[in-house]
Length: 426
Image (tube, rainbow, N blue to C red; front, side):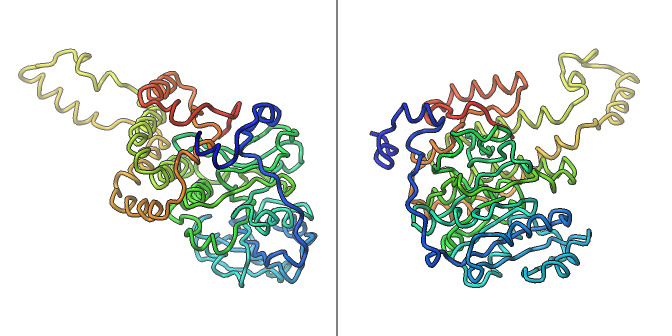
C-alpha cells in the first residue's frame, strides 16, 4: 500500500471521475469558527505603480465580514512613481504604508510586510489588482483556525467573474507552476475543497509562526514561482496547503508584469522553477532528475536563441577545409570579422537563468541543505499533488521528442504516475 493510501485513505475512483481530481486530495472542512476564535490577520499588499488598482482593492477590503479589531492592512510600495504613495496617504491613511527606495521584488516585499506586522496570528498576502468578497478572509483563514492545514489559497476569478484565474496550484516535474482551472468556466468541480501543492501568492493565508519558521518567501527568486517554492517547501517540512473555494476574489491577471521587458520576465520564469527543483527534490530524485531538467532547459535555450545560420559552424559544410597561401590569410581575416552572430535577447535570458544555478553551485547547495535538513515528508507523498507532472510546455517537435525520450529513459512515468489534469497553461 502506498504512502498516499496510508495518509489519506483508499481512493474512490467514482468520486475522482466526478470531481476531476484525485479523491485523496479532497478535504472535508469542519464547522465555521466562531468570530471570537478568528485570529488577528495582517493583510500584506505589494504595490508597484498600481495606483489605478488601489481604490477597488481597498474598497472591497473595507467591506470584509471580519472583526475590525483583528484586522491589519499593510501596503509595501516598491518605489512607485505614479502617485500611488500620495493616494495611499490621502485616501487610505488607515493602511500602514512602507515605501522602498527601489523595487526589491515580490518575495522581499512580502517578507518585509510580514516583518512589520503587529502580533499576527496569520499572514495574508493579496495582490493589489484584486477585489474580494465580504466573506473572503473569514473563509480563507477558517481551515487554519481548525488546524486542518497551515496555508490556504482562494478561488480566484477573472475581474468580470466569468472565468477562473486559479483554483489551486499544480506543477510539472521540471518546476513549471500551473494555476489550476486557468481560463475555464467556474464549474462545479472547482468548488470542492482539496489539498494543493502551493497557495497562490496573489491570494493566500498562512499561519504566522509556520511562515517564519520555514523562512518565508525566498527573496533570491525576486518574483515568480516564489509561491511554488514556498508551498512545495511547506509540504517537504510536514505542513499542508488547502484550496478554499468558498474564499472568492477577482483578479486583473498580470497587470504589473505586462509593463516589464520580456527578457527580464523570461529570465526569472526560467530560473526560478529550476531553483525550486534543486532545493526541494530529495537527494535520490534530484540525482535522477537534474540531467533531464538541464537537458530540457538547454533545448529551450536553443529554441529561444534564433541562431540565424548553423551551417557556418559545421565542418561538414566547409568548402575548403585546408586552404593555402593568400586564400588562407583571407579566410582567417574574414572569419575574425564574422566571429559574432545576432541572437535573440530572450535566448540570452535562458542562458543566464541556467547559469544562476550552475555558476553559484556551492551557494545553492547550501540553500538546498537548509531545506533538506528539515524534511519530514517523502517525495513520494508529494508527487500526486503535482497533478500534471508530464506537461510539455513547448510544442516544438524536437522538444516534445526530447521530453518523451527522457521520460522513457529515466522511467519518469513510473516515478510520477499519470497526469491528472486535462490541460495546463503557463
